[in-house]
Image (cartoon, rainbow, N blue to C red; front, side):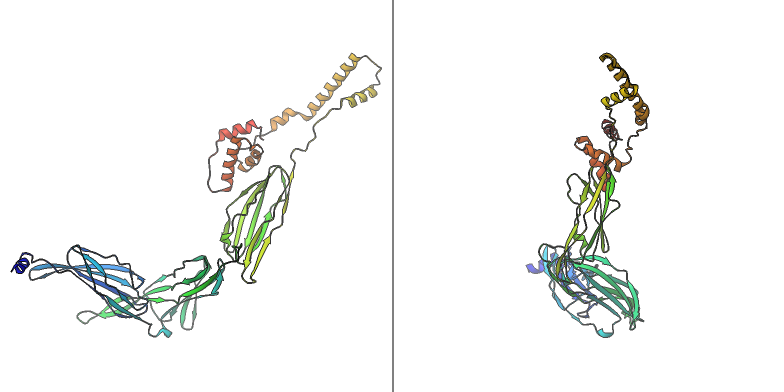
Length: 470
């Protein structure tokens, strides 16, 4: 009696349930499957499903319906998940929270078979490499071929690249298109290198193709619709070996160092360019900047374009110096040898900017010559001193008239604060001064890096005036 009374008091109570299903339990590889959860009950917490059968869910959707049975209203939900299974599997029971309680769905079995008529498919996707056994950093070619049979039509297509975890992709060619054996073929070549030792997988590439199809509605009429199908490539495994100890470069390398001139003026910079050519792992090469005593060296960032690496440097010194050889040590996978290539040392001559001999006056020699020329008689000491002072003044006057030092001072121009390279070379001689060193740091940064800093022009002019820099 009490049981029937409870049912009378709660006529709107709804039974909670979760039913799982798929639109097809037997599909070909590449066909899309829709997995659905039909949920009945109130206060439903939707489950977070992102993968089914070890495959990512492509899209989700939901529908809500309200039904009335014997005057009672019930609500149900249909949650749909689209995915492309790549193997036969069993989708496990799903947990759904309904009105604070956890309900379980049923399991669903799914069988994935081979593509029917695989030898004469409308679309074919293939991957292959030129080497299957490589060293860490050694480059190899991965070729992707997509074949479309002549006469096949596609409304839309979407390419999904393979996962390339553990690899560097160094270059990708432009697609090459041509016809062969009743197929239109698109070819792309990737230049790659392995990052670590071991067996590395290159997963399947995918091409999703949308084509027109028809199905019958509930009245038996044909309805046009779009059907998506995914075509998979083969997968690959590369065996990657470690490099010999003490070597991190692999390939065949050449190196050269070039300077514009070997003779410079005092405090002028020598500009040097290093070029390395190789199909190996150029990205692992560090800066070539050498450590040199009494020589200031400024290096720019390394630049890599294709198979060529370049780096520029500037050398500044007050004395003659030698730029040491640059070297690269690498492992050649063809000859299985460790090799080292060198540049030649470069000798730089610095011309002395202060070569004029100072003016000297030989007092005794002048005195004797004047005595001989004038043939003067012997005189007392005071007369001799007066004549000597007179002759000395005459010589100094002539020297001043000839050299005109006041004109030199008037014509002497101060160095321009806009010419940062000249300023840098002039200030290096006074780098022991903390204020000068700060200015040098800013000039080096502005000349040899992308980041620019503002100069204190007043402070710079004061330093130029203080050290009489011209």
